[in-house]
Length: 108
Image 1 (tube, rainbow, N blue to C red):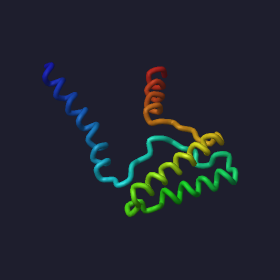
Image 2 (cartoon, one colour):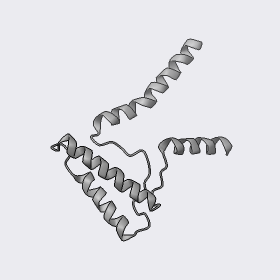
Image 3 (spheres, one colour):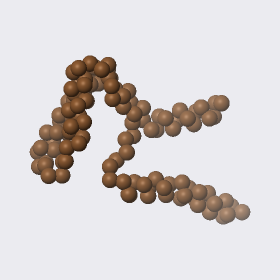
Image 4 (cartoon, rainbow, N blue to C red):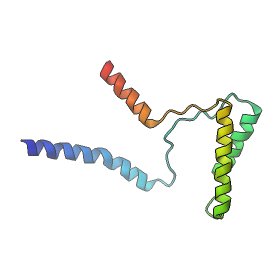
């Protein structure tokens, strides 16, 4: 009986994780793990910074040198810190969302 229970639990566990791994192997771009508000305060400075972030995101980075990629990463970090200082970012991680949903299920 214990052996059957263990096998059934292992089967469900393996089926649970399989679609996620299959999806990760087939997609080229990484899926975002946080929700980011793309419209912080709608100030002109923030719009310019967001447009620059979008331009960097659309840029083909495959033919850039490593020093150029490093400069772009520094620029992106700087822009994100400026936007964060404006108070425009709200991060909600996937783990936090899962934890909140589990707590709501248990408490309700």
